[in-house]
Image (tube, rainbow, N blue to C red; front, side, top):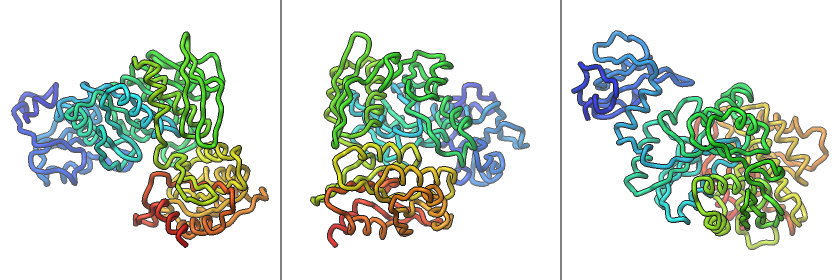
Length: 474
């Protein structure tokens, strides 16, 4: 493809240059590629331009003069990368109605609910997220919550080729800060909530919020949790149409009324101006009310009939790793959930705290090389809400697992809840199963959909469902 077909303001002398591909990773450069120098949180692509030329780059796109004959200097290489990648794939983002979901908790569930709603109404839909990427029923692996720019446009192109009309995607704060969704105009953006997470990257909650808020400058419709204080700030500063949802306030656009919690789900009425829809979910907890409301309000505001929206939600099975009930055929219950923040852990424990049970047992750890301040907070949440706590490892990465566990225990030291420390997560799960009592609810928190564990720099296979099955056989 000629460079003039990829860049709107291509310098005349480079217009006829043949380009074989686009990348911002010098390691992936091959003969004839356009290499875009993007400054990231760790590395600056400008430092690798020479390497890209050695690997065969035909043109270097840069924000400053690097002294190369075959370079194009632009004001913003993030924007240039999006322009080049979009054009390379035929600007598929313009042929889809893209919905972005951001927030600390709930992104994955909301995306799956939206996909179900759109497909229930007859629209083939793509999904990009933490668990996996999907084009209709076809599954693609997911490395990041939000893909890099080239991969993003590549997946959009596959969606268009497959006949998708909608694309729903999780949009992380990292992706927004690193401008991975540059060039995408969102038909709608959803804000779920904001609680402490990723402070190792953002530094403080204000920076974290400002990164999230960027999404709402890129959308035509903002769907916002009215019960979240950060959500109110998004409403105040939004320059687009806004629809709000709430589980407690009549001041929102849509409100959940007559909420009835069940051990295996929750029922409520979705009430808006002049309308009412009855929702009967197969996933439990207050967070399920919020997640389903977010999806339902977005779909309704985009033109989906309310009865089709509620029918889709009522037929939806649970999402893997989100309050997932693992079959045991025993007299106790095992739940797998992705909760890895203080708020997430509180939500999942509160969900099952009120259910008929003998004990509520929680097994969890915290990730290494990540925000250390949330570790004692999660310890406090676990000790206050559970009847028995098993502290173990999550993804320790390059940190010493015992040091992480000690940080967690610091938040539990003044609470008398019984606890057990077992550093090895597989051994911890075996202990939980072996010591289960009739009527217990055992929550394995932190791994959710993940089927691996990162210890040091090594990634090993660890699927908690398999560990549970082996423990039950014993």
